[in-house]
Image (cartoon, helix red, strand yellow):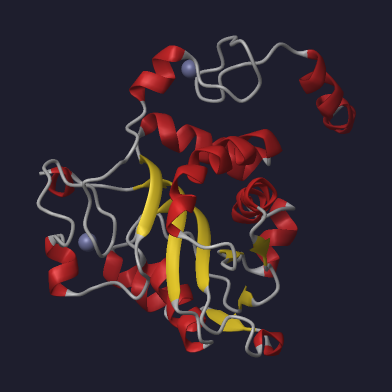
Length: 246
Ligand SMILES: [Zn+2]
Ligand SMILES: [Zn+2]
């Protein structure tokens, strides 16, 4: 029965009326939020930290840095997150991650498009890789789905074979920044095919959720070692504490 329902799912999805990807109520068109979810999402915009993109409650000038960046700047060149991570935005991330809904990836990529002004056409999109065991068990990488949708929409090339994850890391959700750093520090490797393909390029590193930055920093160090000029992180949701918004 389970196999049968899995087989017929795409057909059923097609036949069903469009629903809000967060709360599930009926909406006018596919992959649109209902008004209440739309208003409930915390869309992140400038003013933000010049180094990491952490939003500020007040404009401190275009060169202003947040306190964590003053203490230790990240290895990447900034995060462009569509929304703040909360109950609503995390639901969409979970549904993409465990349901593999391509429409959700397209919706996220559509919202990321507002950050494309900051990158040139010769940039390259690199999704944060999953370890192959996790890829086999899940069947897809949600960051690749978002990256492909962004590539299709922008015409910017996507590379999914240059960076890979050599260590299967345990779920990082409940770990501190320090623990995460230690675990992912050496988790990523570059393919020998990378050659000089990233030299001087801006890399758009695509992920679904940005938490402490450990993963993005570990990837950015590898990409910059391969000659990338800039690594900008594009994600759906960024975890922000109260402190960040003050
Ligand atoms: Zn809704
Ligand atoms: Zn910052």
